[in-house]
Length: 223
Ligand code: SAH
Image (cartoon, rainbow, N blue to C red; front, side):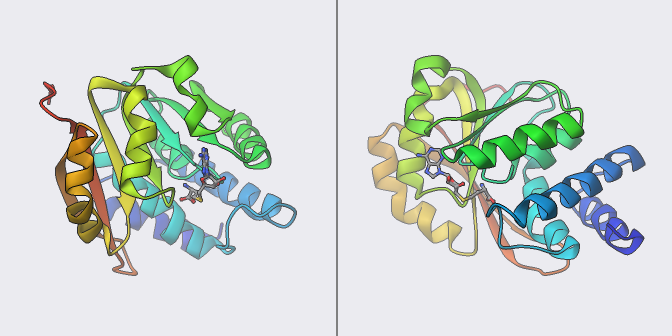
């Protein structure tokens, strides 16, 4: 990553209220390089240059930082090349992350990246979300996904894996709010309510994003 793109990442993070130290900037640069390298052989992402990787993958992933605590356990369902799981893990190293994808080569890439970046408490699993309940029933404080599935399907997979007081977060584009409103009734039938629909604009591009925060109906939540 050129010093210009590194500076862009620092600036994007600052816009999101986050300070990234030099050590972590180096990790993001390494991750970007590996993503580009592996992408020549396996299809991890359509986004292929450092600037777009910073803006569309790293900054977008980091929008979650305000919604999750430093501690606790988080599942990323359908994480592909590691988004949002790996950027989150870099800036929140104490968070225990399980990152899941149904495509093995994507998980092999994530494990390779995790080794290079010295990420601990980061588990990349090649499994379908539908099968996780055998090992992770009622396990997670947060379950997140980006570009994975419609809200009702995502929730149907996430719900059995969520602690009672846990939170499900769908990262959505500009139609996120409408999708949340349209799904309200179905979500209620699933025993879930939308707690908050946070609107934000990505740094630089100004693209609209919504974070749809959901919880079990009537659950007692701490903070
Ligand atoms: N979250 C990443 C990837 C999104 S693409 C990003 O935003 O860049 C959706 C990913 O979900 C794909 O990698 C696909 O393999 C995975 N996927 C789709 N259905 C799945 C399922 N049932 N269980 C696990 N992963 C699934």
